[in-house]
Image 1 (tube, rainbow, N blue to C red):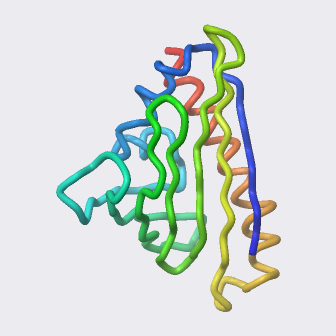
Image 2 (image 1 turned 180 degrees about the horizontal axis):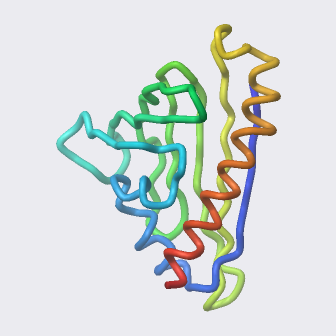
Length: 146
């Protein structure tokens, strides 16, 4: 299992950051690895929402099957991954000041044997995914602060 955590401080109140993060279908606007989001449920917000996230990292394309497991507006959005890569993920928003928010992205992922298993988790998770997610957070910061 690979445990990955990245965070960024955004010059905006928590409510503004949530406003950008809350529409799950718009995550493709700031996530380089997310190509498309296709909902499996009528609901598109809140606990129980299920969706497919078409993901592309370099030459690797896969469908991430996700279910929202935590939903606290202005605070937390959590998911389980049950596709090719399994595990859990969570976005947390913490007010540092009235106008500054720390956005933290935490994932605990298990990679299949054909993506390198435990070694793939180290290389793919700690090196490749961490770099991509840092870039994603810079994009999120730009979107929120625009």
